[in-house]
Every structure is written in C-alpha cells, then in structure tokens.
Length: 362
Image 1: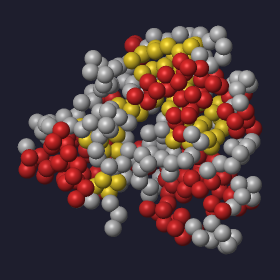
Image 2 (image 1 turned 90 degrees about the vertical axis):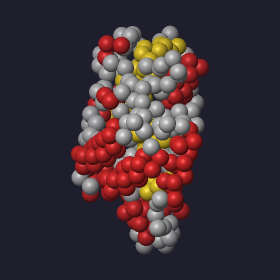
Image 3 (image 1 turned 120 degrees about the horizontal axis):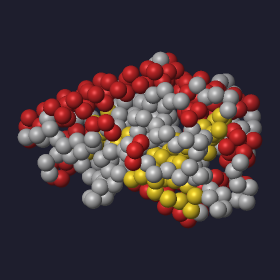
C-alpha cells in the first residue's frame, strides 16, 4: 500500500504517471528496450523530448519569444550559472532575499561578480515569515537582472504578486512551486525549476528562457555552462537525463488530463485552504508563523508547543501512513509539502490526524 507522501523533494509523483512508466519500462513502444536504453539521438527518445517541450509550451502558454531548456545540476548549479551567463563585467545584479535558497543564490553571484541585496525580510532570529512588499524594494534601474525565489520551502512563504522591476530582466528560481498554477512566463527573462517537486524525479532542471536574453549571455565561460549553447542544440548538446525527462512527460500528460494549470490551481488552493483553516482553528496548539498574505500553498510550516511534541507528531503520523512531515533541520517544526501530486483527500487525512492529535495532546 502506498503511503501519503508529504516529502519536500524529491516528492511524490502521480500514480498514473508511475503506472505508465511501469508498463513501458522494459519495452518502450515495442522497441525491445527501455526508454532509458535508447540513444538520445534516436527517433524514439527525441519524440519523448519534443513531446515534453510541447506539453510545457501548451500548459504554460509559452510564447514564441521564449524557449524551454532541459539542464542538470539542479537549482544549486543555476545559482552560479545564472551570474556566469548574465553578470557581465562592470555590472551588478539585484537579489530579493526571502529565505535560505535566495541567500545561497546571492552568495554564488558574489563569487562571480557584483551583487547587492535589494530587499530582505529576514527577522532578528534569522527567519523569514513574509515576502517584501513593492515599496520595500530598493532596485537599481541599471541592474543586469533582478533575481527572486518564488517559494520558500524552508519557511513556507510564497510570492503571490510578482514585483514590478521596470525594464530590468526578471529571473526566478521556481523550483518548489513551478506550474502550481498558471503563470505569465513572458514577465520573466529566465526562470528555472528543479523537477523533483511538482514535475518529475530529481535529475533534470527545466528552464524557460527569453531567446534574446540568453543570446546576450557571456561567451567567455566554458561552453557547457552557456545557456545559449543548450538553446541552439534543443537541450541535446550533450546527453540529457533521458529517463527523468520521460517521467516529466508522463506527469505533464497527467496534469493536462486534470484540467491543466487551472485545474492544478483549483486543487492546490483547496488543499492549502483546508490545512490552514484547521491550523488556525487550533491556534492554541499549532503555531503557523507565516504572515497570512505570504503563506505558501506548496509548503505549509507549523510548530507544536514543544520540540518533543513535534517529534511525536511526526512519528505517529508515519504510523498512520503519512511521511515526510518533519521540518527542515534549519527551521524545525513540521512541514507539509502539498505539491501537485498530493491529492485533496491526502490533505483531508492530514487534517483529520492533526485535529485528533490536538485533542489528545492539547
């Protein structure tokens, strides 16, 4: 029996996507071999590659001005690769600090060139409980780009309104909430997301890049790190993570069957509202620290009265068939990650459990 998976990533995958992979694993479309055994130059794999790009383009409404890239190294590599490409000598980049991952992106940029903090919401306890408002942004109109992290997996905050940055290119790490709802990708010069939260397994990173922006990327860096090179080769310059891309194809096809991104948003908002409503109703026992207007629909964080009760909650939830609820080692507490594959019924089960736990222990 499958457990209810609230892992923060790698996260759960939709069962139909896994079942499709199971059925095709040994013999892919009558070819006599698995999809992971096919050459990335062969027509069998290239059809999967192109279908995955097509599904992304359709679901996101990607305009002709932008292009899909499949990359490796996860978001952590992009923290360095973004400034390597776009932080030209003599320029500076602006970073909006909303959590640990934006801090890491900023640190990598400072190694490559000049970067500045244009906004931060870190508290005196080094934690983040909200995203900044437009009036708090101190942007440089001459910046090479503005970088943000759309969703804070550790502390459970999320951008719900994109900042206005003028004519400066906007870059976003969307690893933990990519495709949770419709997104106007034309607002971004470059966005990137590790697939292992909402779209597939670990091993592949998906980027959506404005073609003219990446064409202006630096040429004095190794070829393999140039986004323009991957764009020119349809992400087939070197061997891509073919199995991970195949599984993303399966997940994207499932998302399309569920009503696309409008369907995902309705489902995800219902899940978040169910869980936050229960936490607020039991506020004497559970503490949800994030300010309401910044609450994440992907990562719901909360604390019980003591660390010992946090540990008991996690252990008893596991016995009840729910895994992945332990908070990050930095932030502690409890974290329920409600990515696309998590169902409304899964969240109802969690709500029932936490309400009963509060009655017993409160």
